[in-house]
Image 1 (cartoon, helix red, strand yellow):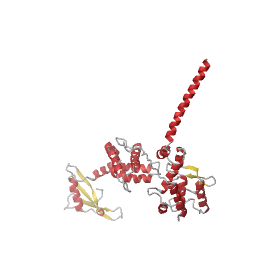
Image 2 (cartoon, helix red, strand yellow):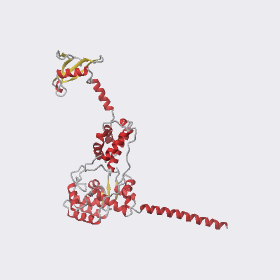
Image 3 (cartoon, helix red, strand yellow):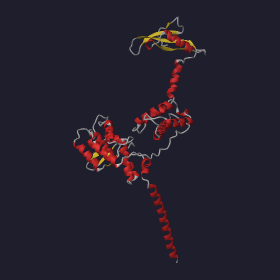
Length: 397
Protein backbone atom coordinates (compact mmCIF):
# COMPACT_ATOMS: atom_id res chain seq x y z
CA UNK A 1 0.00 0.00 0.00
CA UNK A 2 1.27 3.53 -0.75
CA UNK A 3 2.63 5.42 2.27
CA UNK A 4 0.62 8.22 3.84
CA UNK A 5 -2.82 6.77 3.07
CA UNK A 6 -5.38 5.75 5.67
CA UNK A 7 -6.70 2.19 5.47
CA UNK A 8 -10.38 1.43 5.92
CA UNK A 9 -10.96 -2.27 6.69
CA UNK A 10 -14.17 -4.21 6.03
CA UNK A 11 -15.54 -6.40 8.86
CA UNK A 12 -17.74 -8.39 6.46
CA UNK A 13 -14.77 -9.03 4.19
CA UNK A 14 -11.71 -9.86 6.31
CA UNK A 15 -8.47 -9.12 4.50
CA UNK A 16 -10.00 -6.42 2.32
CA UNK A 17 -9.49 -2.70 2.83
CA UNK A 18 -9.56 0.46 0.73
CA UNK A 19 -7.78 3.75 0.56
CA UNK A 20 -9.07 6.98 -0.95
CA UNK A 21 -7.03 8.08 -3.92
CA UNK A 22 -7.44 10.05 -7.12
CA UNK A 23 -8.61 8.77 -10.48
CA UNK A 24 -5.71 9.43 -12.93
CA UNK A 25 -8.17 9.86 -15.79
CA UNK A 26 -10.39 12.61 -14.46
CA UNK A 27 -8.73 13.71 -11.20
CA UNK A 28 -11.78 12.81 -9.11
CA UNK A 29 -11.75 10.97 -5.78
CA UNK A 30 -11.62 7.21 -6.19
CA UNK A 31 -11.59 4.21 -3.83
CA UNK A 32 -8.79 1.71 -4.36
CA UNK A 33 -9.26 -1.79 -2.90
CA UNK A 34 -6.35 -3.80 -1.47
CA UNK A 35 -6.00 -7.40 -0.32
CA UNK A 36 -3.95 -8.88 2.52
CA UNK A 37 -3.87 -12.64 2.93
CA UNK A 38 -1.73 -15.69 3.65
CA UNK A 39 -1.17 -18.14 0.80
CA UNK A 40 -1.41 -21.91 1.34
CA UNK A 41 2.39 -22.00 1.32
CA UNK A 42 2.44 -19.62 4.32
CA UNK A 43 3.57 -16.55 2.37
CA UNK A 44 1.83 -13.26 3.31
CA UNK A 45 0.70 -11.22 0.29
CA UNK A 46 -0.48 -7.62 0.32
CA UNK A 47 -1.44 -6.22 -3.09
CA UNK A 48 -3.78 -3.97 -4.99
CA UNK A 49 -7.08 -5.38 -6.28
CA UNK A 50 -8.59 -2.49 -8.25
CA UNK A 51 -10.48 0.79 -8.28
CA UNK A 52 -14.19 1.53 -7.89
CA UNK A 53 -13.99 3.33 -11.25
CA UNK A 54 -12.81 0.03 -12.75
CA UNK A 55 -15.84 -1.84 -11.40
CA UNK A 56 -14.36 -3.20 -8.20
CA UNK A 57 -16.41 -3.55 -4.99
CA UNK A 58 -15.60 -4.88 -1.53
CA UNK A 59 -17.44 -8.10 -2.42
CA UNK A 60 -15.52 -8.56 -5.65
CA UNK A 61 -12.25 -7.93 -3.83
CA UNK A 62 -13.21 -10.48 -1.16
CA UNK A 63 -13.97 -13.12 -3.81
CA UNK A 64 -10.59 -12.46 -5.46
CA UNK A 65 -8.87 -12.77 -2.06
CA UNK A 66 -10.40 -16.24 -1.50
CA UNK A 67 -9.27 -17.43 -4.95
CA UNK A 68 -5.75 -16.10 -4.50
CA UNK A 69 -5.43 -17.48 -0.98
CA UNK A 70 -6.21 -20.97 -2.34
CA UNK A 71 -3.80 -20.49 -5.22
CA UNK A 72 -6.62 -20.71 -7.78
CA UNK A 73 -5.86 -17.21 -9.11
CA UNK A 74 -2.39 -15.75 -9.69
CA UNK A 75 -1.07 -12.88 -7.59
CA UNK A 76 -0.27 -9.54 -9.19
CA UNK A 77 3.42 -10.44 -9.17
CA UNK A 78 2.72 -13.75 -10.89
CA UNK A 79 0.64 -11.92 -13.49
CA UNK A 80 3.51 -9.48 -14.12
CA UNK A 81 5.98 -12.32 -14.49
CA UNK A 82 3.67 -14.10 -16.92
CA UNK A 83 3.24 -10.89 -18.92
CA UNK A 84 7.02 -10.37 -19.06
CA UNK A 85 7.50 -13.96 -20.18
CA UNK A 86 4.87 -13.49 -22.88
CA UNK A 87 6.63 -10.36 -24.14
CA UNK A 88 9.85 -12.33 -24.47
CA UNK A 89 8.06 -15.21 -26.16
CA UNK A 90 8.81 -14.61 -29.83
CA UNK A 91 5.89 -16.23 -31.60
CA UNK A 92 5.63 -16.50 -35.37
CA UNK A 93 3.09 -13.63 -35.33
CA UNK A 94 5.46 -11.34 -33.41
CA UNK A 95 8.31 -12.24 -35.74
CA UNK A 96 6.02 -11.41 -38.66
CA UNK A 97 5.40 -7.93 -37.21
CA UNK A 98 9.15 -7.28 -37.04
CA UNK A 99 9.62 -8.78 -40.50
CA UNK A 100 7.01 -6.65 -42.27
CA UNK A 101 8.14 -3.50 -40.48
CA UNK A 102 11.85 -3.88 -41.23
CA UNK A 103 12.12 -5.84 -44.48
CA UNK A 104 14.15 -4.17 -47.19
CA UNK A 105 11.77 -5.02 -50.02
CA UNK A 106 8.41 -3.41 -49.28
CA UNK A 107 6.76 -3.79 -52.71
CA UNK A 108 4.85 -6.97 -51.87
CA UNK A 109 4.23 -6.26 -48.17
CA UNK A 110 0.47 -5.76 -48.55
CA UNK A 111 -0.05 -9.04 -50.40
CA UNK A 112 2.32 -10.90 -48.06
CA UNK A 113 0.49 -9.60 -44.99
CA UNK A 114 -2.77 -10.86 -46.48
CA UNK A 115 -1.14 -14.20 -47.18
CA UNK A 116 0.13 -14.42 -43.61
CA UNK A 117 -3.27 -13.56 -42.12
CA UNK A 118 -5.14 -15.96 -44.39
CA UNK A 119 -2.89 -19.00 -44.27
CA UNK A 120 -0.27 -18.83 -41.48
CA UNK A 121 -1.56 -16.83 -38.52
CA UNK A 122 -4.30 -19.20 -37.30
CA UNK A 123 -2.19 -22.34 -37.78
CA UNK A 124 1.23 -21.28 -36.48
CA UNK A 125 0.95 -17.66 -35.32
CA UNK A 126 0.84 -18.38 -31.57
CA UNK A 127 3.75 -20.82 -31.63
CA UNK A 128 7.41 -20.02 -31.21
CA UNK A 129 9.63 -21.51 -33.95
CA UNK A 130 11.58 -23.64 -31.46
CA UNK A 131 8.44 -25.54 -30.46
CA UNK A 132 7.26 -26.27 -34.02
CA UNK A 133 7.94 -29.94 -34.70
CA UNK A 134 9.27 -31.02 -38.11
CA UNK A 135 6.14 -33.12 -38.55
CA UNK A 136 4.04 -30.00 -37.90
CA UNK A 137 5.73 -28.22 -40.80
CA UNK A 138 4.96 -31.16 -43.07
CA UNK A 139 1.35 -31.23 -41.84
CA UNK A 140 1.04 -27.47 -42.43
CA UNK A 141 2.38 -27.86 -45.97
CA UNK A 142 -0.06 -30.69 -46.64
CA UNK A 143 -3.00 -28.71 -45.22
CA UNK A 144 -2.20 -25.77 -47.50
CA UNK A 145 -2.37 -28.02 -50.54
CA UNK A 146 -5.88 -29.11 -49.48
CA UNK A 147 -7.09 -25.68 -48.38
CA UNK A 148 -9.91 -24.10 -50.34
CA UNK A 149 -9.37 -20.76 -52.04
CA UNK A 150 -11.89 -17.93 -52.04
CA UNK A 151 -12.79 -18.70 -55.64
CA UNK A 152 -13.43 -22.36 -54.90
CA UNK A 153 -11.10 -25.26 -55.47
CA UNK A 154 -7.79 -25.84 -53.72
CA UNK A 155 -5.04 -23.26 -53.40
CA UNK A 156 -2.79 -23.19 -56.44
CA UNK A 157 0.68 -24.78 -56.18
CA UNK A 158 2.14 -21.29 -56.65
CA UNK A 159 0.20 -19.91 -53.66
CA UNK A 160 1.27 -22.88 -51.54
CA UNK A 161 4.90 -22.30 -52.50
CA UNK A 162 4.74 -18.56 -51.82
CA UNK A 163 3.14 -19.16 -48.41
CA UNK A 164 5.81 -21.65 -47.36
CA UNK A 165 8.51 -19.30 -48.67
CA UNK A 166 7.00 -16.43 -46.64
CA UNK A 167 7.02 -18.55 -43.46
CA UNK A 168 10.67 -19.44 -44.05
CA UNK A 169 11.57 -15.78 -44.70
CA UNK A 170 9.89 -14.66 -41.46
CA UNK A 171 11.71 -17.26 -39.36
CA UNK A 172 15.06 -16.63 -41.09
CA UNK A 173 14.59 -12.91 -40.39
CA UNK A 174 14.11 -13.73 -36.69
CA UNK A 175 17.25 -15.87 -36.70
CA UNK A 176 19.29 -13.09 -38.32
CA UNK A 177 18.13 -10.65 -35.60
CA UNK A 178 18.79 -13.11 -32.73
CA UNK A 179 15.09 -13.13 -31.91
CA UNK A 180 14.73 -16.89 -32.29
CA UNK A 181 16.82 -20.00 -32.82
CA UNK A 182 14.45 -21.09 -35.55
CA UNK A 183 12.78 -24.42 -36.19
CA UNK A 184 14.62 -27.71 -35.80
CA UNK A 185 13.89 -28.48 -39.42
CA UNK A 186 14.24 -25.94 -42.19
CA UNK A 187 10.83 -24.83 -43.44
CA UNK A 188 10.17 -26.90 -46.58
CA UNK A 189 9.52 -24.79 -49.67
CA UNK A 190 8.35 -26.73 -52.73
CA UNK A 191 9.98 -25.94 -56.07
CA UNK A 192 8.43 -23.43 -58.43
CA UNK A 193 5.65 -25.26 -60.31
CA UNK A 194 6.31 -25.68 -64.00
CA UNK A 195 3.23 -23.90 -65.23
CA UNK A 196 2.79 -24.84 -68.87
CA UNK A 197 -0.43 -22.85 -69.21
CA UNK A 198 0.13 -19.28 -70.36
CA UNK A 199 -2.77 -16.90 -70.95
CA UNK A 200 -2.94 -15.90 -74.59
CA UNK A 201 -5.25 -14.52 -77.25
CA UNK A 202 -5.46 -15.54 -80.88
CA UNK A 203 -5.44 -12.95 -83.67
CA UNK A 204 -9.24 -12.85 -83.86
CA UNK A 205 -9.63 -12.23 -80.12
CA UNK A 206 -6.94 -9.56 -80.18
CA UNK A 207 -8.63 -7.82 -83.12
CA UNK A 208 -11.98 -7.86 -81.26
CA UNK A 209 -10.32 -6.38 -78.17
CA UNK A 210 -8.77 -3.54 -80.19
CA UNK A 211 -12.17 -2.63 -81.67
CA UNK A 212 -13.77 -2.62 -78.21
CA UNK A 213 -11.00 -0.35 -76.91
CA UNK A 214 -11.69 2.14 -79.69
CA UNK A 215 -15.39 2.23 -78.74
CA UNK A 216 -14.86 2.33 -74.93
CA UNK A 217 -16.30 5.35 -73.11
CA UNK A 218 -13.45 5.47 -70.57
CA UNK A 219 -10.45 6.16 -72.80
CA UNK A 220 -8.14 6.41 -69.78
CA UNK A 221 -8.87 2.77 -69.03
CA UNK A 222 -8.61 1.92 -72.75
CA UNK A 223 -5.16 3.56 -72.98
CA UNK A 224 -3.96 1.65 -69.93
CA UNK A 225 -4.98 -1.59 -71.63
CA UNK A 226 -3.31 -0.51 -74.89
CA UNK A 227 -0.02 0.34 -73.16
CA UNK A 228 0.06 -2.96 -71.28
CA UNK A 229 -0.63 -4.74 -74.56
CA UNK A 230 2.21 -2.90 -76.32
CA UNK A 231 4.85 -2.84 -73.57
CA UNK A 232 4.18 -5.79 -71.25
CA UNK A 233 4.40 -3.47 -68.23
CA UNK A 234 2.43 -4.27 -65.09
CA UNK A 235 -0.92 -2.61 -64.43
CA UNK A 236 0.40 -0.49 -61.54
CA UNK A 237 3.51 0.51 -63.48
CA UNK A 238 1.40 1.94 -66.31
CA UNK A 239 -1.09 3.71 -64.04
CA UNK A 240 1.72 5.35 -62.03
CA UNK A 241 3.82 6.56 -64.99
CA UNK A 242 4.82 10.24 -64.75
CA UNK A 243 5.40 12.67 -67.63
CA UNK A 244 8.93 13.56 -66.43
CA UNK A 245 9.82 9.89 -66.94
CA UNK A 246 8.59 9.84 -70.55
CA UNK A 247 10.82 10.93 -73.46
CA UNK A 248 8.56 11.15 -76.51
CA UNK A 249 11.31 12.41 -78.79
CA UNK A 250 13.41 9.29 -78.17
CA UNK A 251 10.50 6.93 -77.68
CA UNK A 252 11.55 5.79 -74.20
CA UNK A 253 10.27 5.79 -70.65
CA UNK A 254 11.49 5.05 -67.15
CA UNK A 255 9.57 2.71 -64.85
CA UNK A 256 10.54 3.44 -61.27
CA UNK A 257 10.61 1.08 -58.31
CA UNK A 258 9.42 -1.98 -60.17
CA UNK A 259 8.41 -5.18 -58.44
CA UNK A 260 12.03 -6.39 -58.44
CA UNK A 261 12.96 -3.16 -56.60
CA UNK A 262 14.79 -1.65 -59.57
CA UNK A 263 14.21 1.37 -61.79
CA UNK A 264 14.51 0.58 -65.47
CA UNK A 265 14.33 2.52 -68.69
CA UNK A 266 13.84 1.08 -72.15
CA UNK A 267 12.47 1.96 -75.61
CA UNK A 268 8.74 1.83 -76.20
CA UNK A 269 7.22 0.87 -79.57
CA UNK A 270 5.94 3.50 -82.00
CA UNK A 271 2.21 2.72 -81.41
CA UNK A 272 2.71 3.31 -77.68
CA UNK A 273 4.52 6.58 -78.41
CA UNK A 274 1.52 7.71 -80.48
CA UNK A 275 -0.84 6.96 -77.60
CA UNK A 276 1.31 9.02 -75.24
CA UNK A 277 1.59 11.88 -77.76
CA UNK A 278 -2.21 12.12 -77.94
CA UNK A 279 -2.39 12.23 -74.16
CA UNK A 280 0.40 14.79 -74.06
CA UNK A 281 -1.64 17.20 -76.23
CA UNK A 282 -4.53 17.28 -73.74
CA UNK A 283 -2.64 16.88 -70.46
CA UNK A 284 -3.31 19.34 -67.67
CA UNK A 285 -1.07 20.40 -64.83
CA UNK A 286 -0.77 16.94 -63.27
CA UNK A 287 2.62 15.23 -63.69
CA UNK A 288 0.79 11.91 -63.97
CA UNK A 289 0.06 10.43 -67.40
CA UNK A 290 -3.16 9.04 -65.91
CA UNK A 291 -4.17 11.64 -63.26
CA UNK A 292 -6.65 10.70 -60.58
CA UNK A 293 -7.34 10.50 -56.83
CA UNK A 294 -4.69 7.83 -56.17
CA UNK A 295 -2.05 8.12 -53.46
CA UNK A 296 0.46 9.78 -55.81
CA UNK A 297 -2.10 11.64 -57.90
CA UNK A 298 -2.67 8.87 -60.42
CA UNK A 299 -5.83 7.06 -61.52
CA UNK A 300 -7.40 4.53 -59.17
CA UNK A 301 -7.76 1.07 -60.69
CA UNK A 302 -10.77 1.40 -63.10
CA UNK A 303 -11.96 -2.18 -62.63
CA UNK A 304 -15.51 -1.51 -63.81
CA UNK A 305 -14.18 -0.34 -67.17
CA UNK A 306 -11.84 -3.34 -67.39
CA UNK A 307 -14.73 -5.73 -66.73
CA UNK A 308 -16.82 -3.94 -69.34
CA UNK A 309 -14.01 -4.21 -71.90
CA UNK A 310 -13.48 -7.90 -71.10
CA UNK A 311 -17.17 -8.66 -71.56
CA UNK A 312 -17.63 -6.58 -74.74
CA UNK A 313 -14.60 -8.21 -76.41
CA UNK A 314 -15.93 -11.67 -75.46
CA UNK A 315 -12.55 -12.71 -74.08
CA UNK A 316 -12.16 -16.19 -72.53
CA UNK A 317 -13.62 -16.40 -69.03
CA UNK A 318 -10.30 -17.27 -67.37
CA UNK A 319 -8.32 -14.60 -69.21
CA UNK A 320 -7.20 -11.79 -66.89
CA UNK A 321 -7.31 -8.65 -69.00
CA UNK A 322 -4.12 -6.79 -68.03
CA UNK A 323 -2.11 -9.68 -66.60
CA UNK A 324 -3.15 -11.83 -69.54
CA UNK A 325 -2.00 -9.19 -72.03
CA UNK A 326 1.35 -9.04 -70.21
CA UNK A 327 1.62 -12.81 -70.68
CA UNK A 328 0.71 -12.45 -74.34
CA UNK A 329 3.41 -9.81 -74.80
CA UNK A 330 6.05 -12.09 -73.31
CA UNK A 331 4.78 -15.15 -75.18
CA UNK A 332 4.93 -13.34 -78.51
CA UNK A 333 8.54 -12.23 -77.91
CA UNK A 334 9.75 -15.65 -76.75
CA UNK A 335 7.96 -17.48 -79.58
CA UNK A 336 9.61 -15.10 -82.06
CA UNK A 337 13.07 -16.04 -80.79
CA UNK A 338 13.86 -13.00 -78.63
CA UNK A 339 16.54 -13.87 -76.06
CA UNK A 340 15.11 -14.74 -72.63
CA UNK A 341 17.51 -12.31 -70.96
CA UNK A 342 16.04 -9.43 -72.97
CA UNK A 343 12.46 -10.55 -72.27
CA UNK A 344 13.31 -10.80 -68.56
CA UNK A 345 14.59 -7.22 -68.49
CA UNK A 346 11.54 -5.89 -70.34
CA UNK A 347 9.16 -7.65 -67.94
CA UNK A 348 11.05 -6.51 -64.85
CA UNK A 349 11.57 -10.05 -63.55
CA UNK A 350 13.98 -10.35 -60.62
CA UNK A 351 15.80 -13.25 -62.30
CA UNK A 352 16.05 -14.71 -65.77
CA UNK A 353 15.14 -18.10 -64.27
CA UNK A 354 11.62 -16.86 -63.58
CA UNK A 355 11.18 -15.90 -67.23
CA UNK A 356 12.62 -19.21 -68.40
CA UNK A 357 10.38 -21.32 -66.16
CA UNK A 358 7.29 -19.50 -67.32
CA UNK A 359 7.92 -19.10 -71.03
CA UNK A 360 10.66 -21.43 -72.28
CA UNK A 361 8.05 -24.07 -73.21
CA UNK A 362 6.87 -21.68 -75.94
CA UNK A 363 10.12 -22.42 -77.80
CA UNK A 364 9.62 -26.16 -78.42
CA UNK A 365 12.64 -26.39 -80.68
CA UNK A 366 15.08 -24.66 -78.35
CA UNK A 367 16.30 -27.89 -76.65
CA UNK A 368 16.69 -29.67 -79.98
CA UNK A 369 18.56 -26.68 -81.40
CA UNK A 370 20.96 -26.66 -78.46
CA UNK A 371 21.59 -30.41 -78.73
CA UNK A 372 22.19 -30.12 -82.46
CA UNK A 373 24.63 -27.25 -81.91
CA UNK A 374 26.54 -29.28 -79.32
CA UNK A 375 26.85 -32.12 -81.79
CA UNK A 376 28.16 -29.83 -84.50
CA UNK A 377 30.75 -28.37 -82.11
CA UNK A 378 32.02 -31.86 -81.22
CA UNK A 379 32.17 -32.82 -84.90
CA UNK A 380 34.04 -29.62 -85.69
CA UNK A 381 36.55 -30.35 -82.93
CA UNK A 382 37.07 -33.87 -84.29
CA UNK A 383 37.62 -32.63 -87.80
CA UNK A 384 40.11 -30.03 -86.60
CA UNK A 385 42.04 -32.68 -84.66
CA UNK A 386 42.20 -34.99 -87.68
CA UNK A 387 43.39 -32.18 -89.92
CA UNK A 388 46.08 -31.27 -87.39
CA UNK A 389 47.21 -34.92 -87.27
CA UNK A 390 47.50 -35.14 -91.04
CA UNK A 391 49.57 -31.96 -91.12
CA UNK A 392 52.02 -33.41 -88.55
CA UNK A 393 52.32 -36.69 -90.50
CA UNK A 394 53.05 -34.80 -93.71
CA UNK A 395 55.69 -32.71 -91.95
CA UNK A 396 57.43 -35.87 -90.60
CA UNK A 397 57.63 -37.37 -94.10
